[in-house]
Image 1 (cartoon, helix red, strand yellow):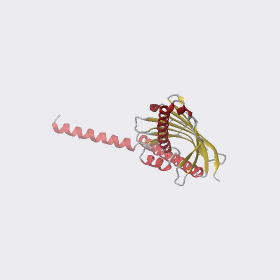
Image 2: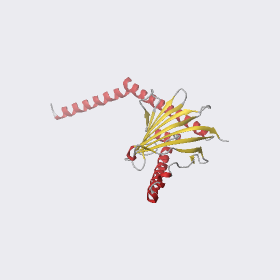
Image 3: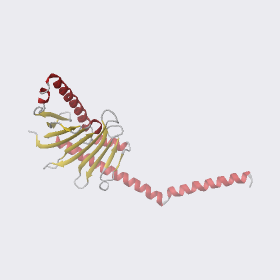
Image 4: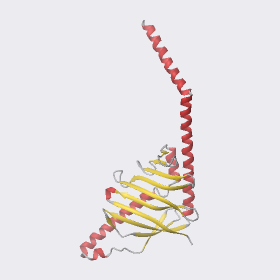
Length: 249
């Protein structure tokens, strides 16, 4: 075979390959896959719209309520005195918390003199600072922010989970780099049933997991009822329950 003949053969094979690729791209299999992809994207957009609408409506309704939050904190296996707060939304749209009652562990510092008292006060201050930091992180996810959800969708960081059918949506890099938030959404009632988050505090190495269960008030308003936070690196486990919801006077 001459050099010219071999060159012609290569051109012919290349043209045949391009023709095959073109046929596959225009064929029924590719069209079906493209159609399924478009259908999945449409379904994803539909679920996201329903979740955003539900979150916005419930957040609006909750601004007319006050409620009590009770937090039970365990540090390295040791249970701390429970903390109660009266909660409501402030004018800035953020949840305001006012402590209810006083500390029940003041006697711990009195039993060991001034040195022990200073140690106890230092630990209490450190714990207060840490729990404030935890509270700020929780506020990034509870309640879910419709604007952040939309931003994640536009960045193509939202997908279906593997929960109940295709009702669960998974958000990546939702509030912090490398985080993950999964929303279990009840299609029939159009309400969020639960929320699961993997995130961090000071750095990605300071991992935190967050689980939130939702419940409904008599008027249908959906709200977080139980929040569980685990910061394994700090040995801290927090369970907060929201109760005694009442309309503002």
